Image 1: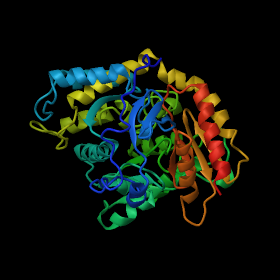
Image 2 (image 1 turned 90 degrees about the vertical axis):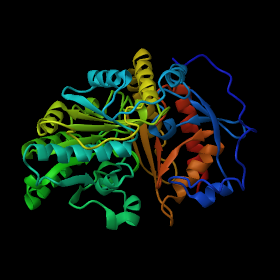
Image 3 (image 1 turned 60 degrees about the vertical axis):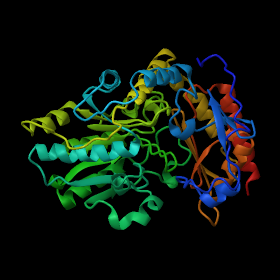
Image 4 (image 1 turned 135 degrees about the vertical axis):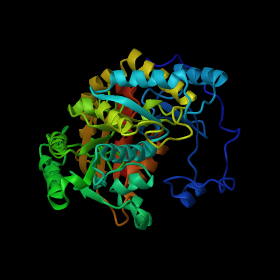
Length: 452
């Protein structure tokens, strides 16, 4: 499944910054002062493991940041990037094109749910979300409904860090410092997580589909003709892995159809096999009008994202302009040749190794491992679907303190996890095997028992 074993370069003593030389970089989503006092440096990676600055092998329980779905430094991907860099390193995407971006768009259209066959390339999930919001506005304007300017997100939703994304997002820490500058005309549906009704559920909770009816109330209060789109993550990831209740997505789809509202799925995390299917839309049998992706599109090797739109949206926007540019939007690196090469090689790997099917086959074993933690100290909920899991811990006086201590303990054991407040979030590369699953959860068990 993975490439034959290769010698990992020795980066443990060459070029690794030490204390006192870390000041120049302002790190993202990091407690900078604390990190620079005790840095955790990763210097190499292969398949399921990182190598840290001390030469230790660290099992990757998070696929980097939900993105390295096929495992690290896969030879077909790295070779495709190198070969492309030697032939065409960059091509402008405005009024010009190159063959790889069109080939990639066709490949993606072939694997998407029916109707989602118009592809717009960006560089990240954040850019994909802002692009999707602009598409929704352009579509309604093209159809003669310019009053549809409001967006509905969801509490605890994460849609990147652009001003559009944090406006429709619902994670308070991401919003509060910028609240005065967020987009107007934004509403939020309630989130679906309620420990009283759905704690320790296996798969989709039975309770909570009715929460989609909050959209009906917003329509009644504001008028359907003011709402452009609803945007949600089918499975909310960065907030701590919230799984949609049975029937919830179906009800949202029906309400949107009833009122002519576009439904946007943010599949930056769930796309490309994470749930044991190509996309969450396939896994749940609900097709949105627009879908945003990134991360697993290139296996994390080169930054890239995309927006998938229904053909009718594309046709309406193009049809509203007789000549010239129809959609005044794009990025310098949209459809970058190296990113396209990485994406095509990644899609080949997914297909050749049947990684989406493999994730589906391993999912029951993974779910059993997650729920085997029940009864350990401080655990108040366990959630799993596909190859993703949330282990929610009881908080201490400082929110996130216990979760971070578990993260540190696991790292000391040579296992990389991720925490969202006091929820440990797991999303390993899809190449993980049962022995590695066992090692991951053994380390978590020890960490949870040790942390007060």
